[in-house]
Length: 532
Image (cartoon, rainbow, N blue to C red; front, side):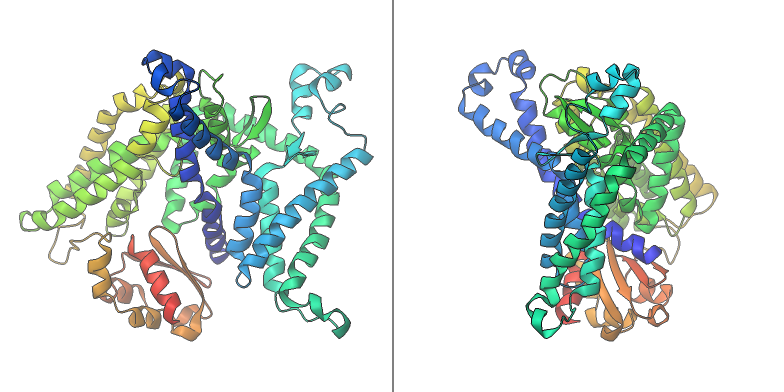
């Protein structure tokens, strides 16, 4: 299960990786073409309708918007190609075809069942005696995908297609057919079997999805009714899952599917927290972003921009004097990374293994941050993570009236103080071996690619993984080398990785191995794949 979730999380990151640039384009474009902002700051002659910059910024906004409008297809292709071990291109193409076929079949069967745009509208259900809430729920089951009338299965439909096509591609990429049909053997068989298989699923979905959709809506409402308490557990759980890199397999369900709620924006039903935010961002008629949508990510701003940098300061202050010069620059670099970009693992993995109690406290504090900002109706969006860049684009530039961003600034200093003194007191009272403390303390962070690469022998890394013949798949995320091996027993012990190969930590489960190398992980992945 660990191995499969690891690979699934990696596959999720492929489509998610295109979203930051799309979000930036949409954020900048929407912010600087917003009529209220243009008029407020007297920029009509520069950014007003008809100016050159207006056309450029409107185009940027349109580019970003089209990406978020087609997330289901993007996820289908991205997951299929990401999980396919062979013939990734064929898997991606097959997923695109299968996605279209699935929705066409759903649309056809809906027609057979008498479901049309006219018979699935709110007004129609009201004539059948349903109250306005129930009529809206029933109508929300149906909608359009790439111009096809279908059920609103959204990104979940893309995930289903991606998983199915990846499974079929891995199973049949070398399939041999009888001589008379040999042309369709191997890679050409992947789109054929994908279309046949998704046709069965597409024929079933219209009969079961309405009930599933209503169930998910009810569950989401229940989760929302738990208010800040439910969001506290969500925030803490995501931070704890980050240890194993499994959060990538969970949060996209809340960000991009109906599990994260659904809302009508500009006349279209939008599903998922982040998708709702960017739909509202693209709609000039929206005067306040929905905190119900942003509650699944806004809470990260306080710990990422203020909390962890303060924790880094606490580790610096508690380091031995002789080591402060060494660890100071490294901790400052990691703190600045967290503040600017929201990438926190360089700091987190500095204390996770030597002082796990600090990580537990960090997870609890992050959960509290999620709960408090949600309770205060703060609705600042994100692209990839929650640093000052995203805060500026989706908070400051959007205005406090739309986002309530002021609470992040007000609570920033108290958050920093809490993190600083909590970490400092625990480090001193429990004598925790954070960077710069103790004779054998590690006085480095794993963010210096060039220096570390000189210290690590790629052949030794491969040997520690059991040798070339033991490697099935080698990949990496931002901070982790992710490897699937044939025999986990051949993988070196934790002490070898930490003492000899400069790793910050290692996780082994089933046939999956994750080695934490910070920003060096991607470099190591490429080097290993060159010579394995």
